[in-house]
Amino acid sequence: MTTTLPYHRVNVLTGTKSARIIEDASEYAHLIKRATRPLLVLGSWALTTTLGGKLLIEYGVEIAKTLDIPICATAHTKKKLLELGIEPASSYDIIEILNHLKDPEWKGVKKEGNHDLVMFLGFRTDLGEQGLSTLKHYAPHLKTMTLCKFYYPHASYSLPNYRKDEQWKEFLDNLITNLKSKEA
Image 1: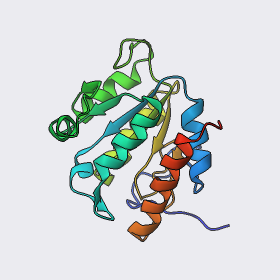
Image 2: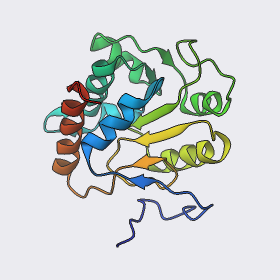
Image 3: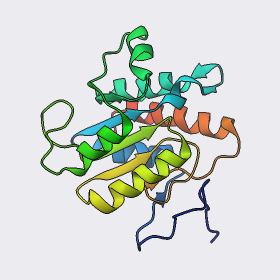
């Protein structure tokens, strides 16, 4: 068995828990479908990253639409979401949403109860590492999942390091296909 190293090799050996690496899109889809109140948090890199000519934010929108998952727009992603015809459930600064997610009494972005699974897509890797570390240590009521192409050891579930964007694109396409299927 080989060890997967994160993109940032700092502050990764804190505690006994580390991310479960999942390479199978159907397993990721199963975890998302099982969640009762999932949330998708989109970061600014979703506006500048393209996979096969398609913006990363468009992948995020497609993932959210399949199961009616609320989207939290951070940075300046709200404008692009509105251009795509999507009204985000909330618009927070990344630090602000992390602080809300730490609170087990928070009612969530739709005021229906706190979220049980939070997915992150399109964040700077250093910010993602620290934010996930915060949630790992201060939000035990929450599961976190990354959809980015790097391994994040502080998430509950993470993708491996994809060296080629084609691998990442294939995973996201398969994830969307699996989310659309009726099987749980």
